[in-house]
Length: 88
Image (cartoon, rainbow, N blue to C red; front, side):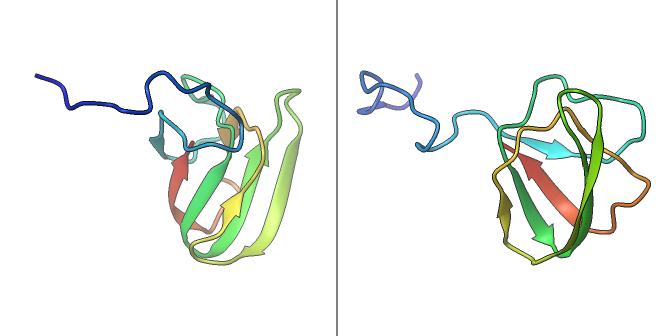
């Protein structure tokens, strides 16, 4: 039996908690199964995120524990040194 969700009737918002999240394995051609609304960085470094239009942008020196509030279709392996990434 699933746990009781007392917040199930509340409206979902962009600033509210994420219901879906997934481990990110950087790759130069494979897009995520769904677009990430933000990316949490576990171990700091650079993140080469790919925008919805296909443009890659590298965020330099992202700190461990930082949340990038960006929509991304992929994180490229080339140019990414940060690890333990989670898409939300």
